[in-house]
Amino acid sequence: MQDFEGKTAVITGGASGIGRALAARFAAARMNIVLADIEADALDKAVTALAERQTRVIGVLTNTMLHESILELAQRAIAEFGNVHVLCNNAGVASTTSGGRPVWETPQSDWDWVMGVNFYGVLYGVQVFVPHMLAHGEPSHIVNTASLAAVLPGGGSYGVSKHGVLALTEGLQSDLASRGANINASVLCPGFVNTLIFAAERNRPDALAATGPMQPEAQAMVTAIAENMLAKGKDPAEIADTVFEAINNEAFYILPHPAWDDIVKSRVEQILARGGVATTDMTAVLRRRDAGEQF
Ligand SMILES: NC(=O)c1ccc[n+]([C@@H]2O[C@H](COP(=O)([O-])OP(=O)(O)OC[C@H]3O[C@@H](n4cnc5c(N)ncnc54)[C@H](O)[C@@H]3O)[C@@H](O)[C@H]2O)c1
Image 1 (cartoon, rainbow, N blue to C red):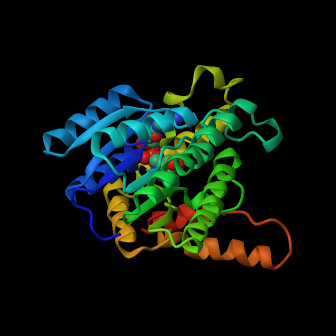
Image 2 (tube, rainbow, N blue to C red):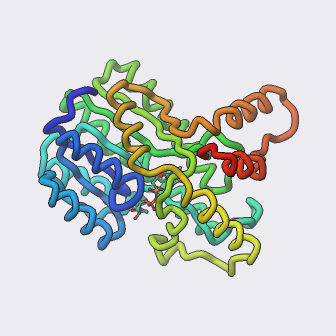
């Protein structure tokens, strides 16, 4: 897709971080913007900031965990601007309350929340918007936000959800291509980006409240990652520029952090070696980060 002016972009998780930066990038290309988010105050602020820059923008309070909420989002977007051309299924969360617990002790509420937003939210976006894009037939593009966690070993509920987004998006792109659709897809797999993802608990539904106290070592690890990795991660605006270029060039895999490449490669090699399980050596990552590489 190369023609952006006057076209419409819908961005979930658009009130903060990467989603908000994507909206600013699309607005700079003179697109109409539909921001969807569960956090009302942040959504209002993001909409106001874009409107002040003469962007045609609406905000739609949306819970991407719910299929009917995404349906309403599509109806609002189409009623306001007509055809939708870019969809960023970007809303995502990470549980910071069960860090350090083994897989079998991770609370069901964590699995339901993290899979609900990170995986099912993306799936519902695809189910609702692809038929609309197929029907209008104009060039369109879908960007699903996964994470580098989609290509690294393990990662708990977050890693599982992001592996799912990668597989879903690969299937989506090949199904679109085999039907000759005028739609392309991309999967975004960033390393650390300086956003509020580690404060995602602010948006956890009461019905899926965290269970049990957080172990002190796990809390310390979360704080350390937030302070050492996230706060020193890439600027969301840089990620948004990379995504915009990928849409323009119809690139499928978007990996804005090449420092991880050799680590991803070694995971694949470990799988093909048919030996023991692959792991990520975070101490080595921290050492290399301190030496100036951007993870
Ligand atoms: N920040 C990173 O280092 C990083 C790295 C890799 C991938 N990601 C992914 O990037 C995406 C964006 O996250 P971010 O880093 O900008 O974090 P962020 O917390 O700054 O933004 C996420 C947005 O999603 C919204 N959201 C949460 N639950 C929602 C729901 N149920 N319905 C609608 N909106 C909801 C939040 O309100 C927030 O505005 C996520 O999918 C995340 O997993 C982030």
